[in-house]
Amino acid sequence: MSKMMMLSLTLLMVAVALLQSTPVTAQKVSENWCLERGFDPTNLSCDTCRLIDESTTILKLQQEQNINIGEECRQCCQFHKVNPVLHPDYSLRGKYKFALLTYNEGSLSQFGEIKDFLERDLNDVLSFKGESRFKAVASTKSSMDAEMRMQMMMMGITNGGGGQPKLMLFDKHKKGGWSEEDEEEAVEVIKLRGWKREDLKDMLMTLLPSA
Image 1 (cartoon, rainbow, N blue to C red):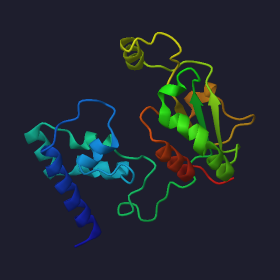
Image 2: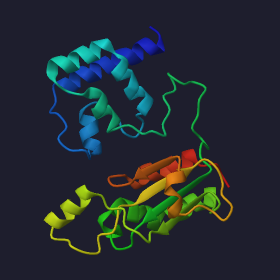
Image 3: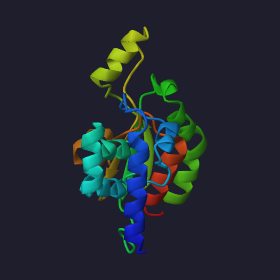
Image 4: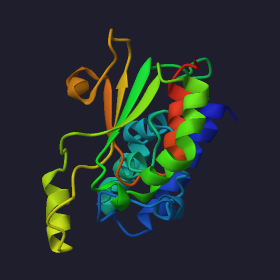
């Protein structure tokens, strides 16, 4: 049996298991939620999820059971991971030239994983990548979306919220360096709410070239 056939069979088995589980009810999902559905978020590449969308068998199962397996897969996948079966000669290593992490000091305590990353992992990343490749800076503006403002109001928090941490990825260098004002020029902008510190570190170590 070929590797592609084995992968397709595995996806079909995952689909059947998913159809027997409860549907997703929130945008943010936990690692346990993914594992219960057969998805390992530490190794799942998003190009694998695209195979689900292309499978007529899984599409038929989704229609019969009224569940979107492809969407659940995408909520668990890591865009910086590559499926070695689909792309045996392709690597995302060193894909971007620079990454900028911005955070609001007033709301950082609400994002414990990002706070831990800044306190425990930042120096490790900088030692490998250097400040010419990565920087973490306190934001001077709020990027809080309407959903998050509503959640904070329901919790009785009316000030000091700020915005959620974000990671901006650039595919070229800029004279004088990139800042949060250059967000529109970033190739990727990732909101880091719900991210694990180890996943963030792994992504930066993968996508950025060494110093």
